[in-house]
Each structure stands twice: as structure tokens, then as C-alpha cells.
Image (cartoon, rainbow, N blue to C red; front, side, top):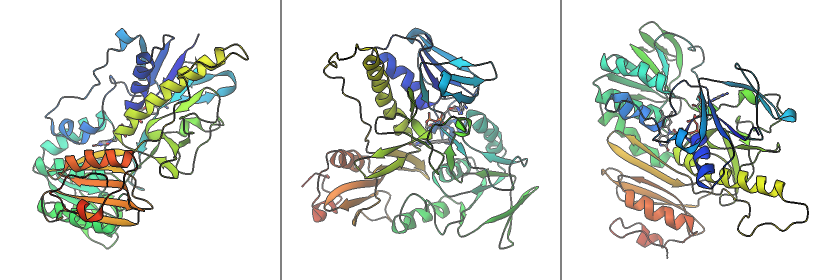
Length: 411
Ligand code: FAD
């Protein structure tokens, strides 16, 4: 049989294949990846790999020992669900079960696509191109003060580059966090010796300079663009698989798509969150680690159900797996360890734990007295305690929770 075919050899794809084996699946499992490299982890690309303190970040997975076939350097260009086939440059690839795990692609700066000296940061090849740029200590302009922009600016300052960060919004992380929380974070740029220019738009990129729409010219030996990422789902056009306006494959709570035998997971897939009452598209590492367990469980369960004679009872303990995580991510920027768990949309109360002028502080969001999200800067214990409380739907006493000397605990 054709078995399970996973498209995308990033964290989500690889973890899906590994989870299938861990859960006892014995049929063929193939992972197809467009990049030529041995599958690797992305977070180090804006950290140790960029600075050259780590050579690479390949996953330590014994693919051969697990009986997982890797087909690398092969892009999938189309899906024909009626015949359960994928199109590739190497010819059609049949599947019985398909897992879409193609991740996300960085958004290019309009007008600067393919301009020499303008870089994105998503792949190992990108990081390897940027390493000598840092080593040569160019003047660097970073476009976008999001997570990637902040991490890249941190690495570039550590390498001794002059760094200017140009942000279209009025503050860093405008898409991710509310203004009162990002105000102290804006100071981190200046503290690290990087200039942050907000409310600024790039009008053009010229050789050696970036020109803003206000007319200001900034010297730029290199430009790094970090203005967001979109699900890499263009190859699914015309296949009939449901996608949302954000380009994500719209999976259900079990990470199944609307096509039979097709699942989606990781940065390319959105899913309905019962916990938060809205559809989530999460572009963080933990989601690409946890989601695959749900996919693997449901692939195995759905195959078993399909093989069951009609009318036979289902096996106890094989209820469909539901994916309803408390999203989590971390970022390492300007010497700080920033962590976030939950989802603060719809929160009615924001509590500070500690002073944002200090090195370590946290923010808690409550809804009807229950903790729904936590942001911790240099306070990993707040994060882990808060995450557990969120997971269990626990409530907090606001006065006690605002005291940073008292451990967080449910009221
Ligand atoms: P991806 O990692 O994007 O993998 C998808 C793979 O599919 C890619 O290798 C791609 O080449 C391949 N592919 C795409 N289309 C096709 C096709 N048509 N055919 C075949 N293959 C295809 N998250 C955090 O929580 N903390 C961090 O500190 C953090 N740091 C990050 C730093 C960087 C520089 C980047 C880029 C991301 C970072 N992230 C971080 C996010 C995290 O890495 C992603 O959420 C995670 O990699 C998502 O995994 P994925 O497998 O869904 O997608």
C-alpha cells in the first residue's frame, strides 16, 4: 500500500511520522520535504545557528531505524484527492493517508523581492547566507519589529553590527501583544544599541540604503525582512481542500481537513479552539510538537475504524483525539527570555507582576476571574505555574497574583 505520506519535513511533519511509530503504526510512512537538508529545527536559526555558535540544528531522529522514508529536495506541486495522488517533479506519488505539514513562508517586502542584499529568515539556507553578513559587521536595517525582527536585531548587535529596525506600526509586536505590554519592550532596542523607528514605511530599497516614505535614508549593507509569514498552501490550489482567508488549511478539532484521509498540522493549519471559542492559527514551535500527536492518534484510529467490519463495536480507548492546546511559545531577545502561554483575546483584566523597568516581570490576563494567558519575561516559573492554571481553567485572586514574591496558584 502507499501508506501515510507526510508533505513537509519540518517539525510538524517529522513529529507526525515519529508519533505514528510511537503509537505503534507499522505501515509505510514517507516524509517528503522541499528542502535538500536533513530535517532540522528552526528556532536556532535566529539564535545560535545565526551567530555561528551552533553548526546546525538537525533533528536527532533515527529515520532509518524507525522505518520512515525521507524524500528530500522534492517539492509537492499538487494534490489530486479523487485518485489519492500528489504531483511532484519526480512524478506522481500515491497516498492512502495524507498529512499536510508544509509550514509557512515569510512574507516578502513589496517591491524588494529578489533585490540583492535583501534577506528573509526562514530556512537554514537563509541563516547561512546571513552568517557572513553579520561577520562582516555591515550596517543592517531590519524591517519589522516582530519576534523574528527582535531576535535578528539581537544577534546582529551581538555580532557588532549597527542595527536600525523599521516598524510600520507604532510599536513592536503590534500584532501579538497589547500596547501597554509592548511599551517597556520598545526600550529594549535602544538599550541594546539598536535604533527602533516606528510608524515608518519603507518606500524603496536602493543599493546601500533603505529609503523611508518620510524621505529619511538609512545606510544598509544588508536588509533583513521579518514582516510575518503565511501558510505555505499555494500548492493545494484547486485540490478542493478548505482553506481560510489567512491561507491556512482549515482543519477540524481532530486536525482532519474536509477531504477524506487528509490531515493538516503545524504552521500551515488552523483549528477550532473550544477553550478559546475561536479558530486559531499558531505559528510557534510547541504547536508543531503537540499537534502531531493528535494527528497520529486520529490517523491510526480512523484507519482502524475503516478496517472494522460493519456493525462491529469500536475498540475501547480509541475515541477520536481532540486538539485543544494552551498555545505556548518563547523568544530570546535582547538578553531576555520571553515566554507566553494561552490566548489573551477576550480577557477583561490585565495584572502586572513586578515592575516592567526591572529585568524580570510578568503579565497575567484574566477573564471572569480565570487565568487565560501569561507573558513572562525572565520569570520561567510564572510561565510554568501559569500554564498549568490556564490548562485547568483555574481562577486567581488578583491581589495575591500581583505580588511577584508569591508563587502563582489557583484560588
Ligand atoms: P516548517 O518548519 O515551516 O516546515 C515546513 C517544511 O515543509 C519546510 O521545510 C518546507 O520547505 C516544506 N515544504 C513547504 N512546502 C512544501 C511543498 N510544497 N512540498 C514539500 N515540502 C514543502 N517558535 C517558537 O515558539 N519559539 C522560537 O523561538 C521560534 N523561533 C523561530 C525562529 C525562526 C528563524 C523561525 C523561522 C521560526 C521560529 N519559530 C519559533 C517558529 C517555529 O519554528 C515554527 O512554528 C515551526 O517551525 C513550524 O513547524 P512546521 O513543521 O509546521 O513548519
